Image 1 (cartoon, rainbow, N blue to C red):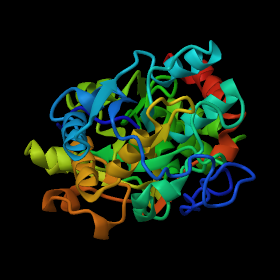
Image 2 (cartoon, rainbow, N blue to C red):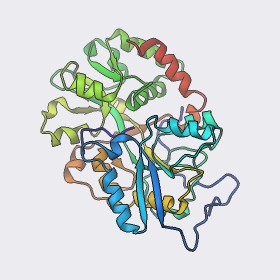
Image 3 (cartoon, one colour):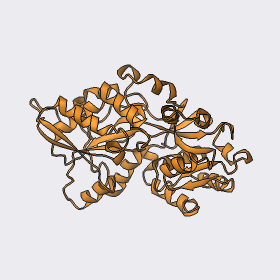
Image 4 (cartoon, helix red, strand yellow):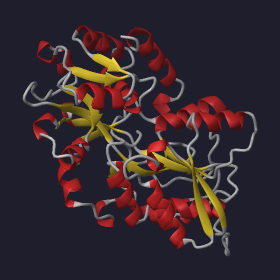
Length: 370
């Protein structure tokens, strides 16, 4: 899930709790070779790769993180890098055994880990983390384990894909199946699962709901009922939905935070959780296997889970913090307008391995161009 720029496993769909088992295979629970040094090297330039809206746009979190991290570590410099191809850039560099020129990646999803392992082999690209070196890791909420069997990533925020709708035009859909009924004909805007994080998340939600053998038939029913699929979230939300071309869009459950800040009519920004569910999309951070500034990288992961950093990231990214509520203070407006589903669902790492590309490709052949 990528930050919205408007503000500065199958059969196991409920997200599992944090397992606390992030150690290298065969090693004991105290370390994986990244044991904490007596005198860590906290001098130098730490390079953190991320996506563009973390560092650019309306009030992004990245500049604050840089300034605050450098204030805490006076002999360190944090440099952001935004690769044009995102994670693909580093997968290709790793395949070529070329310099990665980065220490940390901020913005990993579960499907990214699957893509890494499908491309590079099990446990590729990132180090298996020794969480004993990350004091604040113990603050992470239950339910935000990224499901990686190789323990390479920790969540730093999360969002929930849901439906945003205009209550003056349509009623709240109680189930995903209801979206195929006449009451919702020509109502829904969705995104291309090949090019959009919320689009892919919504597709996986339908795989979870209707099964590997039934999700395409469900999409055929959606298509017959007039679903409109656009390339990305911005086009579907800022373009079609905000121009009132349709009364419902696949979006984020923090939508009302934005609507309230912009003083929009809240009747057009209602949140629907069909079946009481929303699709959870935690964002994670990991340390590259070939990181040159390992000690600073561990300090950055710990810093990103600190109370102040969590509040800034959540509110500027308009997502939920990764740490539990007793460890972070959020604005009253965020607490009021950011909604969480009764049940968070996801398709986990094990179910995605070897299946994700096929599901997306099969979907795209029928629906991506419509």
